[in-house]
Image (cartoon, rainbow, N blue to C red; front, side, top):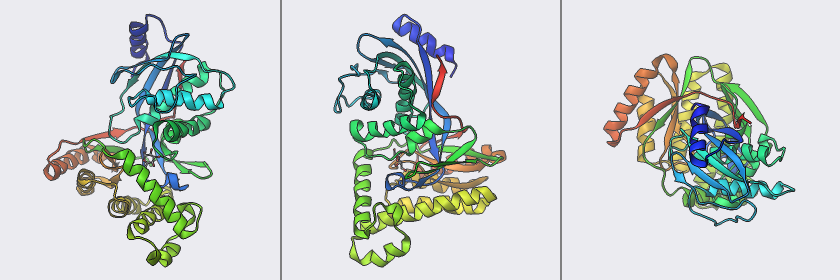
Length: 380
Ligand code: GLA
């Protein structure tokens, strides 16, 4: 996305130049799914599908215009409250609201243009990217002097308290703290990040089922509640603190569905650690096994997959050059992530999409992603 593009749209929309342009990427997650709200481990990376926002300060209310989604509902950053809108402007408004909680002065209202190349509904977290882009821009124009970690934390506050999704912090941390060429192993309890290079010769491929995610908020919040219940049954603070032995010993004391939810989280945390070791030693076979196990655990124990995600993962497993593949993100639609030998990329893409079409009747899409830096200002 060339900068001139968004500057020009800004001029056409508001008849003036922007004060600043910011960017925030979407994310993939190699492994560690539905672990982040259990104080567990995740392994995401920021990708070259992101969004740019151009902004200037205004004395009137905050106005947002998205090239892809049109005009957002206007709001006043000083007074906007949770419940303000069901439209996409709840993300910028929520971020302004969350930033206002920590600011010792009133934030300025903004005129904003947003341009995005993040595929919508694919589960690469356009919402976190939107929050982080507004975060860096408001941080600058509102003279808040916050770092990107704090912006990520406030992005989660926005999701939990304003938007009403009880999500963890993975997406915001990935969008805010990503590093070019690196996957980030994040301990969501301590927030410590260890960066691991994605091995040379391997490509990260997003395999989009083109099935829009559905039921996400209610099912997501339900999973989180079930995890909290499981932790209570097990007598631990969070499922991060439980192990498989403890779970198996207590199995007969609680409902099967709660047992299976806990089993997924506990085994996924273990897989996440094993994955970093496999990446370091270049054990591609183990990487493949762990990704497949992750998918099956999300499918059968956590029950957040769907026919299309299962078909896509199975198609990728059967395609040439595939090291590993699994469903990614919240679930119920969206995309799988695959690690693929770069020199087999074309053959992989062709075979995966062909098998997927036969199995599901749908045209999927495969996109190789570059791993990039996190949210930042591009010009001020
Ligand atoms: C969504 C949430 C994240 C995380 C994933 C599942 O993307 O926003 O916090 O829980 O689902 O791993």
